[in-house]
Structures are given as structure tokens and as C-alpha cells.
Image (cartoon, rainbow, N blue to C red; front, side):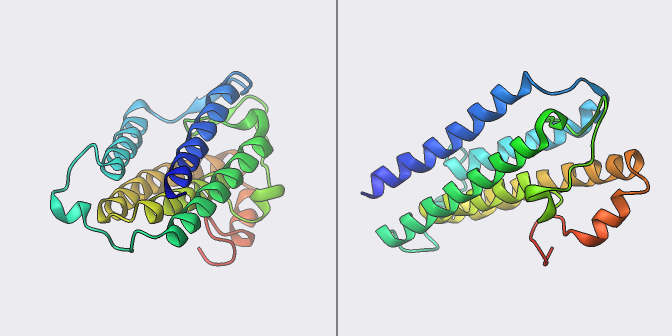
Length: 190
């Protein structure tokens, strides 16, 4: 049963990736986007975090040590969190529609989306991805996952800062009010 849950977690990430790739074809053209160097930093951090989480980059024996027991209950909780996080990220991606971009950008005819998951968090795609990542590392249970999580979080914080600045420039009247009303990642908290 645990093995099935791990396959389920992998399928969640594969489905999320497939939806992202498919959605690229429907995005509006960008009129302004993040520089290559900023994007390179985010991609490098995300890849490094992913390699550490997956065990492809070793942190030694302490990285393979477990921070939670290897039980069916924990694996199930991890799967549920991963599935829920991926579903939340997909909901946010679909809500953004043609305004979405993998690279922080301002699109032609860009709209400020404040409905659906964007009424709960300003960056609900990242909220979903981080929740899914917490589920994945909980199911895996290795300390390397915790290290990898914080490296991926660092990449997302870097990206969020740039997104916040271009949204402030693009929507100078509406975005500050939205920022005051809606937290960045965790509804009502952060």
C-alpha cells in the first residue's frame, strides 16, 4: 500500500507538470518579463532543491536519516497533502488563465486576478506547490527533504519578490489594497 501511495505522489507531480506545459500554449504574449539572471537563480535553486529532495544529490548519511517513522499513516497523510497541494496549484493556474507565465511577466492586456484561490492568497500556485512539497517530504520522511524544501522555498521567495514589484508597478491603484487584504501564501497568516 505504501508503494502505491508513493506512485500516487509521483503521479500528482507528473500531472501538475503536464498541466503547466500544456498551459504554456495558451498564455498571452509578454510585454515585460523578468531578466534572465533572476530566472537563472530561481531555476538553479529549484533544481538544487529537487535533486536534494529526490536523493540524487547526497547530503551524506544524516540526509538519509528519517525525521518521521516510515508508516502507512504518515505516507497517507503525505499523499493527501501532495494531492491537495497540487489540486490547489492547478485551481490557481486555471483561475489565472491566459495571464499565467512560468517567468514573472506582465502580459498584453494583463488583468489583476483576485477571485478564487487569489482571494485566499496572493501566490496560491506557490501555496499549493509548497503544500504538495511538504506532503512529499513527509511521505519520504528524510532530513534531506527538509533541506531541499527550504532551498525551493528560497527560489519561490526570490520569484515572489519580483512578482510583487511588477504587480505594484502594473496595478499601482489596486495592488496595494489587494496586498493589505490578502496574505501572500497562507490565508490570514503569512
